[in-house]
Length: 74
Image 1: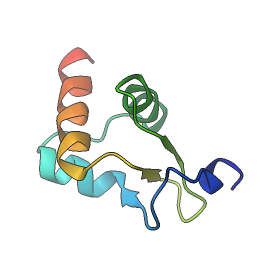
Image 2: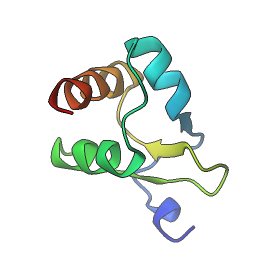
Image 3: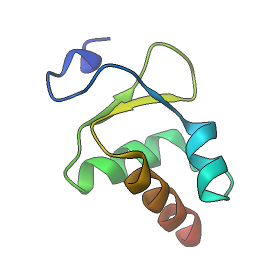
Image 4: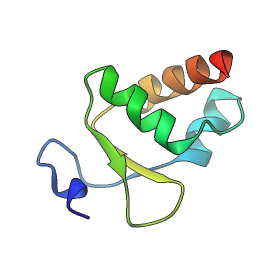
């Protein structure tokens, strides 16, 4: 929960299932997605809300693109 207190993170969360559904790909590994978002310059962390939930200041459209990129590399 300490990571979730980052002031750059907006309220709310994004489910990994929602990202993968919109990207039309299998869910990327959660840690890989978080690391990729961070490399892109966004804040991102796991959320205590659930096991497949992230908090990020990245727009959902960019999360979808990152998920697609990850899946093409795996």
